Image 1 (tube, rainbow, N blue to C red):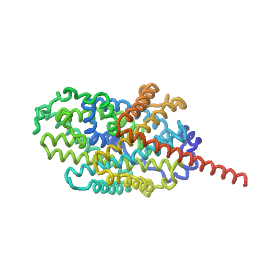
Image 2 (image 1 turned 45 degrees about the vertical axis):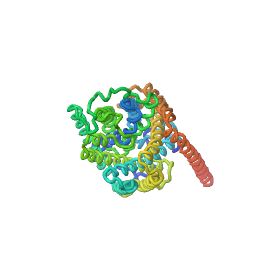
Image 3 (image 1 turned 180 degrees about the vertical axis):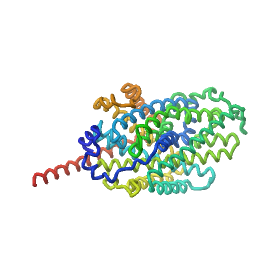
Image 4 (image 1 turned 90 degrees about the horizontal axis):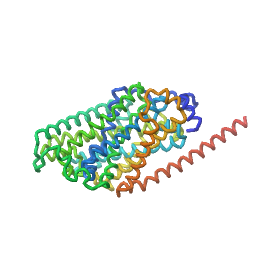
Length: 487
């Protein structure tokens, strides 16, 4: 995207460019209602990282996992508030890649757009991998790759149909998750209140939260090691930002969705984890399995465990569905901005960016093939989720940096804003410091360090691609100028 395009964004004249006029019949429809947006936001807050990854986090962090989720949730809320103010300051912004381009420059939109696309590709891979793991609860001898690839095929077909169907799928997926977690917490409260004793002799009690060495069983390093999976659990919280172009009333739905984040964190993360620890004790949780399923298995209720396993499987489907949606829309936006092949900007009759969808799903299918190399579900999940966490942090960094530059370049828009970020620039810089801190944390663990060491390959590749794109655009400008001179 050129600097002129960035100026058009700032002036609120997105459709004024010749490029967008040509695409006027190819715009995404605003088919998502407030009901859809609220559920998409909730679905983003209840991801595979919570259901599957919290077992591993508990095993290394103990009860300090609760503090971990509170800290991450606190700062990520401010990232979302910054994003909300930027998107509502100019509703011509389709995604956060657009305001990054407008305030930081073309390079930022290019890097953020492609990194966020890669982020959700990897997330979708992680989700379908754990779907295979969940199916082994019922069919222990079933190869993991069969349910993984089957779920991929189903979700791809469903996303071909229409935007509204995506909204409906997420609505019902999220409703299942919300209902299940509320029932899960109520069941936990009942077991704690009645002093239930499991077959292995563990009595449900709040005292498990305060057991000797339960808070920091492996010291500060164990506490910090829990951040990676915990960060992955929050991937998807920003999904409301990618739905902005397809939301009927963004000024109403986006603030409602973002403002409810703290309550969702307290209920879905803190509430559920307190129940798990109190009923089973952190030391009894297996790092290789979902603690939500394990809790009912340990207390001797296999039917309830099977029901929860169904819920966490639908949760993974929901997250994968969100990933498919996000990647296709991000490619669509990149194509409109000349940051991706023009063919990705073509929409189907149902206004679905079908070519971007096909390309994204081909990448997810290829990535899921890691199951043939690393058949252990938790090992494959850890490798994939670490890469996602790095890309998520990078995306959030550019969102916060865009807000900082927005305050500098467009102070009048901030003054007029009806949805200002609390704490303003102070909280923006403090959040930026926290995001840098999380990168340092990732270097402390062996598995996450491997992902961190490989991540520069992606950014170097993007740098080369961006330089190539700039060179190509310059050549086109020269050719156009020569034609004008000739005429």
